[in-house]
Length: 259
Length: 303
Ligand SMILES: Cc1cc2nc3c(=O)[nH]c(=O)nc-3n(C[C@H](O)[C@H](O)[C@H](O)COP(=O)(O)OP(=O)(O)OC[C@H]3O[C@@H](n4cnc5c(N)ncnc54)[C@H](O)[C@@H]3O)c2cc1C
Ligand SMILES: Cc1cc2nc3c(=O)[nH]c(=O)nc-3n(C[C@H](O)[C@H](O)[C@H](O)COP(=O)(O)O)c2cc1C
Ligand code: FES
Image (cartoon, rainbow over all chains, first blue to last red; front, side, top):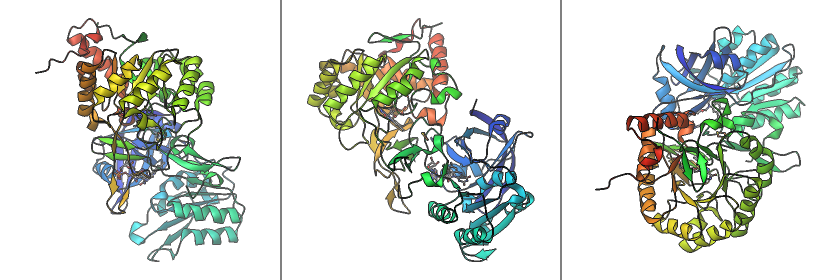
């Protein structure tokens, strides 16, 4: 079995900011199968479509998975009203995750806003060999910095307005980090414009870069072609690739950023 | 226990619940949840003569009690379908229906000839896709073209031919009659109803294609009414779909005139939707002391 549907229990709810919630869910089957960078498809009972959310952490022994999400629309607002002890139904773990090197390699993680959560399981893998660059609009939107520190990761915090950490973009911080010391791999998740620039900086430094793409989804399992994004083919053409099945993680070189 | 088997145009289905085209891939993606052999049948994603990349994204939008899609027939082309996907699906004990689409009459004929030679139980002629600029739905909206394309495809199709009708017409009953006159062995309906959603903040349509096709619970009453109209107009069997997500919905569709049903978008909400419908139909038929599920077909008593 690669994935399944599981109705778990919401073991722990933490509200991280005005609009961002962290759920720890007892879902032992999904936890046992989960890998870095995969996602779950969350049933929002009153609504037709499930919401895809990255796996922000998993504990195979405790049988839990963690998701961290921002309230954007109706489905995530419904989720935010759930309470500890409530049931929550997930399909997962879905998609292909981040390829991991040996933990003694040097990794740089670049998370933008609500793209930060999927960086966490990677941070745990590399521990002190990882640098986690996180970017947010402003101090009140900052999340997960203590979690990264708990893994022994070096953190670099950026805000657009300079109210926390350094003022400026994650891509500038990445440029500095890669100039200061060699890295073996870059991982990123966040707004598409940010990921595009992260990919360009990594490429300029000759470092492989993996990104996590976002598309609206129907089935989540490769059956509807609803989630396709534009990718490059080996012969220099372009094609449409299912994010839920072949992604959400792609080698940055595969993405056609104009698509 | 009521007999759940249905026979449509000579094709045997072990139960009347079939996965709808475009929502169940090539019948294998849901194998992690349950084997496709639990279903009465599987309709594959539309195939075309050549590879199609479909429309740019976003291709999916949620709606009240439903969804819009503008996938636009993305598929690897009929040859790869036959080589890579069909043999895997054939290995499952389930009726296999190929859904055929195209740009031109010649495309439809050539693609149907290939899939029916390769061996499928039935061909569903998709002249009702709202998401492509040429071909697709434009073949399905006039009686003359429906009759002509059905007849041309019928001549090369070695298995029973079912024509899938679009609801985006003035009289679906007239279109169904044209399909029957062209030699269709069955009709299926409804494909999606064209619709649009707009993001009020960006003032942009959510779908990159601007418009898409509506499916899901929102369309059920429209589909039930159309199945009823078609049932009164033709004597070939009908497979009903559109918004079915529970066994009650399936019973309604059968009472209106459907010999079997297809389940589409409901599978996105709950991957087990079809399985629950099959079990629920059996329980309903038993509670009504039916000897066969076929007794439901067309049995509504209109006022
Ligand atoms: C692989 C993947 C991983 C993700 N991981 C996270 C995460 O860890 N944390 C987080 O906060 N968000 C994540 N997202 C984005 C999240 O899925 C959307 O913010 C969420 O679906 C919006 O739902 P809603 O009910 O708030 O909005 P509504 O507007 O009510 O949603 C309507 C429909 O559109 C879809 N939709 C709307 N916006 C998006 C979007 N940006 N991406 C995909 N579908 C969308 C919804 O799923 C739903 O089907 C991820 C998206 C993908 C594809
Ligand atoms: C994402 C998606 C893709 C679809 N693709 C096809 C297709 O390729 N061919 C086709 O005949 N119908 C296609 N349909 C239409 C369905 O087969 C069905 O007619 C319609 O969705 C109504 O049923 P439902 O309400 O149960 O989903 C598609 C529907 C959806 C939601
Ligand atoms: S969401 Fe259905 S194929 Fe990806």
